[in-house]
Amino acid sequence: MASFKHQRAHDIDLPRWLYAVRTLKEEVHVALFPELQPSARVLLGPGPSNVHPRVMKAMLSPVVGHLDPDFVRVMEEIKKLLRIVFQTTNEITFPVSGTGSAGMETAMANLIEDSDEVVVAVNGAFGERIADAAGRLGAKVHRVEAEWGRIVEAERLEAALKTARQPKLLAVVHAETSTGVHQPVEELGALAHRYGALLVMDAVTSLGCVPVEVDHWQIDACYSCTQKGIGAPPGLAPITFSERAMKVVRSRKQESRSWYFDLAMIERYWGPDRLYHHTAPISMNYAIYEALRIVVEEGLEARFRRHRANAAALQAGLQAMGLGLAAQPNYRLPQLTVVQVPGGIDEANVRAELLRLFNLEIGAGLGVFKGKVWRIGLMGESSKRENVMLMLSALETVLAAQGIEIERGAALVSADHSYSCVQ
Ligand SMILES: Cc1ncc(COP(=O)(O)O)c(C=O)c1O
Image (cartoon, rainbow, N blue to C red; front, side):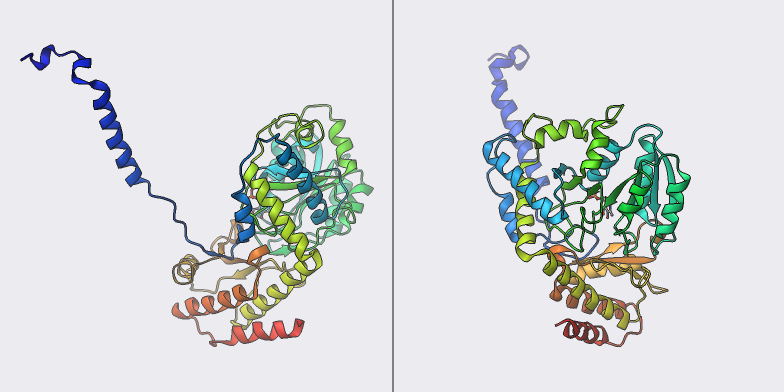
C-alpha cells in the first residue's frame, strides 16, 4: 500500500474534497444568513412612509435594459407625471438616481460655480445641509438663520440678497423635516429674480403632501424624494429646472464639480439622445411610475385635503393629551408634526415601546432638537384616519405607562371631533 506521503494531490481526488468542503461552508453560510423577514411596520416617522401594494407589485415587473424601448416609454411617462405633480411645464423634469440628497446635490452642483454668492435660509437640519453643500462647491454662503421651529422671514432673506454681491441663488427648504415648519415660499421666486438670483427649493418632505407650484411660484430648481409624499420606497429624487435655470447651467464657465450629477450628461440620457450615462435603477422607476399614477388618480387637491384633515385630527389629539408642538402656530406642516417630549420622559424608550407594542415607527429629534422632540409623519400612503387613531391611542398607552397623567380617551375624542368638522 502506497503511503500517504507518496500520494500525489490528484490521487486523493482533490477536486471532490475541495467541493465537499465548499458545500459544507455554503451550508454553514446559508444558516448564518436566513431569508429576509422585515416586519410590516406602520411607518409614521419622517420617512420612509408606507408603500401602496400597487407600487410593490410594479417593482416585480421584469427588469429590462436601461435603453430598452419599453423602459424608454416608462421614462417619458414619468417625466409627464412629474410635471403634473410639480405643477410645471419645465422640459427638464426627471427623477435623479439617488435619494432626496441626490436631488440637492444635482441642483447645487449644476447651478453653483466657484466663488458664487448664495443665500440660504437656515432654520433646521436640512437648511443646514444646503448651506454645507453650497460651501463645499466653492460658494460664498450667506446664511439667514431663524430659531428652530420658526420660519425665516422674507424681509431677512431680502436683506441678505441685497448684501450679497451678484447673488446666484436663494435656497430654502419648503418643509423643514427637523422642526415641522412650513416655510412660506410663494413670493420668494419673484424676490430672488428681482436680485438676479435663482430660487432653489427643497421639496423633499412637501411634494405630494402640500401644494408645490413650481411655475406659479417661479421656482427655478426644485427637488424631492420618493419615500414620503409620493408613496414609493426611497431611491429616486424627482427634480425640475426652469428654463431660466437651464440657461445658467448651459452657460457655465466650469464643468459641474460632480460627474454623477452633471446635468449636461444626464440630460442626454433622459432626453432624446438616449446616451448612456449610468444604468437607471429600473425597478425604482417602475415604482415611481405607479406611485405617481396613484397620486394623479387621487387628484392633487384631494390629496392635499386628506393630508390637512388627518394632520388637524392628529394635532388636536396630541394637544388634548397635553403635548406641545414645536413649530410656530400657523406654519405647521400637515404631513409632519413635531411634538415636544414632556419633562421626565425617556423619549427613546417611548419610541421603542411604540415599535414593540404597536409595530409603529415615529422619528427622533435631530440636531438642536435631539432628545427633545418626536417627529410624527402622516405622509402619502401613511396619511390615513386609522393611522391617526392608532397613533393617538398607542402614544396615550405608552405615556400613561411611563407615569404621565393623561385623561384617557380625550385625544381620540378630539381627533374624532376634528374629523366631524371637516366633513
Ligand atoms: C427636507 C429634507 N431634505 C433632504 C432630505 C434628504 O433626503 P434623503 O434622506 O432621501 O437623501 C430629507 C430627508 O429626510 C429632508 O427631510
